[in-house]
Length: 146
Image (cartoon, rainbow, N blue to C red):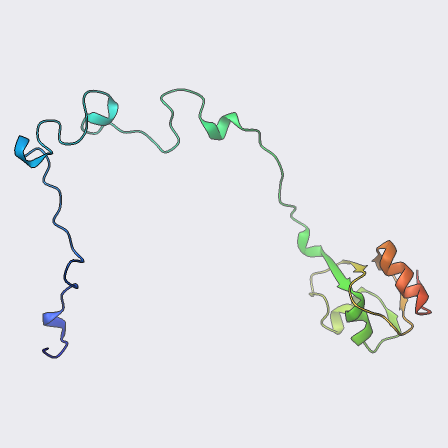
């Protein structure tokens, strides 16, 4: 085999197929109508339509109802696990303390503690919500919520 060079690159054998030559006689199997069938918009030259067009019938994307949305202030809220509180050094924890510890992002304004992981030390939460399970776990560890 010769050395690989830009001037002798070629695709692997069998990788390329000859283009279908339509409208070149009945013997080709694609003569006369050229594989387009008989009549109708799709048989004509230039006869096509936009994606989703259903011949004037109300298209599917307009028949179905619109539902749901993406909230713009999703980045303002964060969830904090009990296990993340366990790793922190601070006794009194507020949103600012969570930001400084790198537990939540800098844009976060509201945090909520969820019951995930274990908490065995006493923490006091200020201005942070908690789920019912997380609240019970914090109070069981001797902590408090304000």
